[in-house]
Figure 1 (cartoon, rainbow, N blue to C red):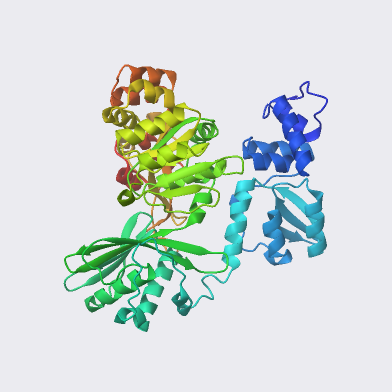
Figure 2: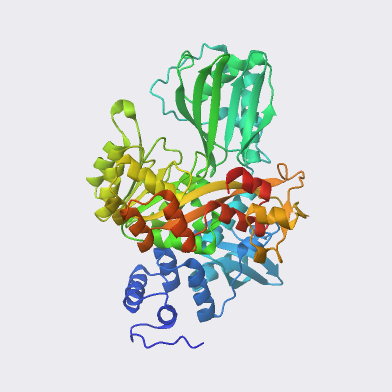
Amino acid sequence: MNTELKTSSQLHGFARRLVAEGLLEEQAAVDASIEASKKGQTMLAWMIKSKGVDPEALINSASIEYGIPIIDIRAIDLEHAPLTLVDENLIQKHQAFPLHLRGNSLFLALSDPTNQDVIDAISFSSGFRIEPILVAPHHLERAIENALQANSPLFDDFEEEGLEDVQFQTDAANDEDDSSDPAVDETPVVRFINKVLLDAIRKGASDIHFEPYETTYRIRYRLDGILSLAASPPSQMSRRLSSRLKVMAGLDIAEKRIPQDGRIKLNLSRKKSIDFRVSTCPIMFGEKVVLRILDSSATKLGIESLGFEKLQQETFHSSVIKPYGMILVTGPTGSGKTVTLYSALNILNDEGRNISTVEDPVEIRVPGINQVQQNVKTGMTFARALRSFLRQDPDVIMVGEIRDLETAEIAIKAAQTGHLVFSTLHTNDAPQSVTRLMNMGVPSYNITSAVNLIIAQRLMRRLHKCKKPEDMPTEALMQAGFQQDELENLNIFKPTGCANCHEGYRGRSGVFEVMPISDNIARIILEDGNAISIAKQAREEGINDLRRSALNKVAEGVTDLTETNRVTKD
């Protein structure tokens, strides 16, 4: 198909192609070309940085324009990639990944293979002729991060004693030094806790529970959303374990009657650190301590890695790049709302935008984003922080949760006055979020004018590659929610279990209901329609609910029906 169009004489090469393929308006392409030239960058590099075009479409166009092949780096086993052939600093600086060596030719993954200076520099440093391969920038960044981390001495050469010098910071007001307590200096306790922390990180746990009982003591990890027993130390160690954890978090070890919150920052290597949010609570036989493992790298995932279906992803991305309006994310605690929101904020996080967030608590710290911790004791509520933000010339605002009418009204007013607002609610699905706002006292006309998109989400465990096919009767499949026309080519799987997974599962994937506020849905809201009416209209518009999205993942072999039934309801 001939995509050539009449374009401005100012446009040549790649810029002209972007216009011809309908990826950029002509004037936008002219402006981008001028800006790229001013910055001394290639047109492709500038477009990647500006994030004005879908990255997949961008590299497809670049491949055609420059005659360079594309690969999906996610589909390649990078375990044996010749990383040592290129200096690590060059890999990170230029986002270049050595894929394969054939003779004197080094196949190099790049997001911008048009930059000849980069190719020349790596060729000179390595001594090989470079064959460039195009890779989507967000996939390439992730592959480089994972590969360099795997090659670092993070876990292989990290002795338990290395954690004894843990660097920590405290959010607690009382940081009383009570080194006279025996728990502070007990080497066995120190080593035991270090081992528990390191083991949790290795296994990919999200939380660690330290639980004292009358005659037993239990330590559990939350792996892929499910708690499992990790260790059972003697109950006599209860006080010493809690004291050690409180010392690391900067909490008052003498105070055992009230809950306390703190934070541990653990530096594992030169480039890798893990934050732990620490919460203590006095219970019948001591203090329960829960550590939430906060890995900021999770929020650097692109939205394409969260588990969205293609249409859902496109809808989400188009709402994120709008200049104003409100995007709501709903779901229970631990459903991945924070990661979804920060993945969106990372798209917008550049020098041209002022982004402010207020959270309770601030779980993940991100450079370039102004993050405020809610503190009711000092009067720093969500509502007060929002009012302050509006006097700070904001472009993007994120509110941790809309809990009351005051917060809702300020957030909606901000969305109506030229700001992009992100927030969360605790409801079961997207249609119920609308009725929840109405029940708070928000007028229906304010909801329709401010809210662009509502997302409901859950996290489901992913089947490991050791999975096996499962035969199920047709009646059972249809009862689960599949349609007759889906059954012919339907292949479903069940967990098996192996040494490299947890009960047949490894990792989690999001399932989403992505509901934009269409004209018809807006009309139902203005007529004070209920959640059932809104949900019915959403289904008529082809919007998948959580159950349908989960069944689609079953059909794709991502998860199984047992997991679907656990996290969704028909």
